[in-house]
View 1 (cartoon, helix red, strand yellow):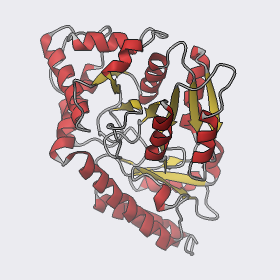
View 2 (view 1 turned 30 degrees about the vertical axis):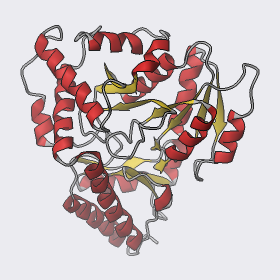
View 3 (view 1 turned 180 degrees about the vertical axis):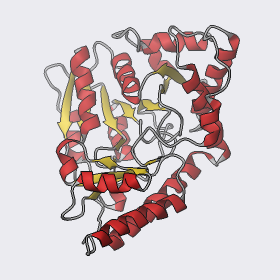
Length: 365
C-alpha cells in the first residue's frame, strides 16, 4: 500500500531495514553516536553552522516539536502574533492558550494568499500588553496545501525586530527556508514527512543564542534541558531508538540523493504529473501552482462522487489518499507525493482515477 497522505510516508526498504539493527540502551555510547549523527545531519540539510544553530531531538510527533518551540522560546514577557490560515495555525493558538502565553491571532483566508498589509498592521498596533516580540506561522499549511510566503513574512518581522517561529513540519527537507535571515529564530519539524523517516522522532532547530532566554513551561518538552543534555551526549528520557535509527538512515539517503534541492525537484515533478493528469480528467486543483507547495496539493472532489467512494477506489488499487479536514472532506481531497513514490506509481494512480471515471460512463468534469 502506497501512502499519499501527508505523513507518515512510505519508507524505502533501506530505511525500513535500518530499524532491524541491534537494540540499544539509551545510556550507552552507541546511542549517543546515533543521536549526534542525527543532529549533525539535520543541520547539514540546510548547511547550517553548528556554532550558531542547534538541532534538538525529541521522541514525539511534529506537533510536540511545535509545542516545545513555542513554549520554550516565547519568554514570560513576550507577546506572540499567530498567523492562522488553516488548522495547523489554529493549533499554535491552542498551544498558547494551554500555556497562557500572551498572544493574539491574525485570521487569514484559507483560500487566498496571506494579506501582508494586515500582518504589518497588526504588528504595528500595540495591544494592552505592548508590542509583539515574536510571530509564529505555518510554512506549509497542509489543510489546503498552501505554501505561505515565508520570505515576505520574514522581511516584515526583520523590519520590526520581531522574531520568527516557523512550523516547518511538512516543509523541512524539501521547501526552501532561508536560515540566513536574522528574523528567523527557530523551526519545528519531524522525521516522517519530507525526510522520509519513521514516526516517533521530531526536532526543533534554533539559534543557540535563543536558548539563553529560553523558559521552562513544560516538563517533557523542555527545549533548554533537551538541548543541554544532548550537547553533553545525554538524554533526559528514553527515546524511540529505532525511530532514530530510521531518521539517521533517511538523512543519509536524503544526502546521497542530492539533498534538499533534489528532493524538491522530485516532489515538483511528481506533483505536476498528478495535477496535469487530473486536469485532463476534469479534476481541478484547489489552489494555483503559485500558491501551492510541491509536497501536497488539494483537489476538488469530482461532481457526483463523495470522498468515501474516491478513497475506497484508490485503496482498492493500492493507494491511501487523504480527505479534506472537517467539513472540507465534503468538497476536496489531498494528494501528497512524499515518500518512496515513483512516476510509475503516479501513472497507476491516474489509471485508477480514469477507471473510476469510466465506471460512471462520463468524465469527471
